[in-house]
Each structure stands twice: as C-alpha cells, then as structure tokens.
Image (spheres, rainbow, N blue to C red):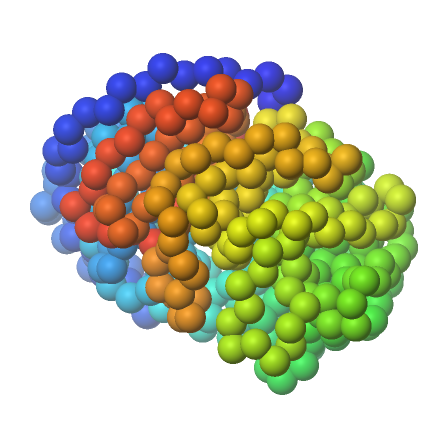
Length: 399
C-alpha cells in the first residue's frame, strides 16, 4: 500500500473519440468470429492507454486516460455490464450477460479470455490472486492476474459451491480459500478450504451473508444481516450489530488498517433504505462502531485512501474522509451536486473509485467525471463524456 499521497496537476482537455471498437457479448464457446472482425476493422493496434480507467454506459465501455481523463476509446458491448480491477496494470474484469470477460484496457480491446456462466458476481483481489464468483452456477475461479497478459486463460483454481447463490470468495496468501454458503433462497455463512479444496472450517451464523473485505494481517470479514463474520488466524469470530437487524452488505478494506469500512442498514421493511450511518469494524478487537454521516450514500460510495482513510461519497455530493480508528470525520471534499439513490440498483448514480492518492467520481446527471487530489481536496480535472456513465473502475497494480 502506498504510504504517501502524490499530488497530480492535471489539466482538463476537450474530449475526442479516438477509437471505436465494435464488439458484442459472446454467449458461446467460440469467440474467433469476434476476434477476426476486430482484426479486419482495426489492423493497427490501438495506442496504449496510460493507467486506464473504464466506465460503463448503456451499450458499452469508455476507456479513459488515467491522468488526463481523455477518452481514448470505446468498446461497444450490449447489456448491463459491470467492471472491476483484474489486479494487474493492464486489465479489467467485465461482468456480462454470458459471464466474466477480460478487457485489455491498456490496449483498448476485449480479449478472448472468458469465464462463462450465468449471473457473474463478485470479483475479489487479494495477495496477488483474483477470485471470481459466478452466482448462477456457484463456481469459483481463482488465478494470478499477471498471467492475463499472455492473451490466454491463466492457470485457474476452481471450486463449485454445494448450491448456486449470490456469493463471494477470496484466496489467502497461504492458499486457503474462503467462500460463502447458501442457496438461491437463503445464505447462511462461509467455509474455508485448504489448498486441495478440502473443507477445514465453516461458520453458519451469518444470515444473509454478502460481500467481503480484507484488513491488515489478512483479517477477512463477511457482511451479515446482524453484524459481520471475521476470519483471522484460522478461526471465525462473529461480531454482532447493535440492532437486531443491522445489515452490512458492502465493505472496503485496506492493508494499511485493521479497521474495515462497511455500510449499515437497520430497517428490514424498507423498499430501499437510504442509510446515513456507516460501520467501522476493528478486526483486531472484534468490535463494531457506527458513524453518523449526516447524509445518505449508496453501495458505490465506499472506498479507502492510500493511508487507510475511510472514504464515503454522500448524496450531498461530498466525500467524507473518516479516521478509521477514532471514527471522526476529518474533512469533507465537495465534488458533485446533490443526488438521490435510485430504487433500481442497476440505474446510474455517482460512483467513487480510488487509486493511489486520487479519487475519481462520476456524475451521471451531467455526463461528467472528476479527479480529486485526496491530500489537498482539490478537484484537479473534470471532463464531459458523450453519454452518462454507470459503473467506474480501472487498473490497479503499481498504485
């Protein structure tokens, strides 16, 4: 984890659509037709993009220069797509209708590498390994992301859950694989497998288990409807929420801190609860505290800074910088206008993505994207894109 914050002086520039690569989601085994069409249309490889960011829009992906925010290229891809860092300097994982696909963001091209399966879900990076969980099949695929540069699927560890469910998995440095337990109707906890996929531990006291995050010293927590479930030093520990129903479903961790940042919802009857409190989970003390933000936020609002700061993008348009130890809000950084979380979770809303000392924030209502220096709170660059964006991510290695 980078322990210093590097200030960047970025200059906004007018956007120009330099490259448009037409690709479609492939639901079958053979993707050679797409590859040949791409080769015919673009015989010359696209220019490499520096520290690329990737933003989704209705019908495709925008690839942006990470320093200037200039639009470098567009990949057309129908359907609702999600993006996550692959774990290396060049690639991003795209969750499509047919499964997980690998985007070479630096080279502005969708590769032939695909992990097929219905309802591709969580992508988790930890200890130099990337884990994919396919909800529709319960299959887990784990690989070293540095192998993606070969253009072929890297050596992959696989595990299939007893029942398909909306789950998540993470592989630890010692080779242990943590994966959630559940069915389509009920999720209950998590188990631990050794290097040979033999079960060595489980805990089913985590109703509605959802999401994970890793803290310093490889403490991993899964969110529950009544707190969190922590796995550390070979054993599970349950930390109860202060309310009977205290759901934590999304978390953000940092190698620089033993404290995890989580969301917090306490109304089980709400059609869509717009929470105003976040949770701070101390994995060393096995404690949980709540912080009142004075504003609501969404599941795309949580991130961590380079020194372990807890960051939350509120619906008032400001990023709150929280000391994870004291729980104090150190400062507020205004970035975008006021917004309201939509009822449909797939609909666009401002999204926070942090890399190094820079926070990137989308503003769909204005088709805008902003870069903010976390050290100074200065908005260093803002650009306007052709269409409103939804999800926002990028490459991460080296940052």
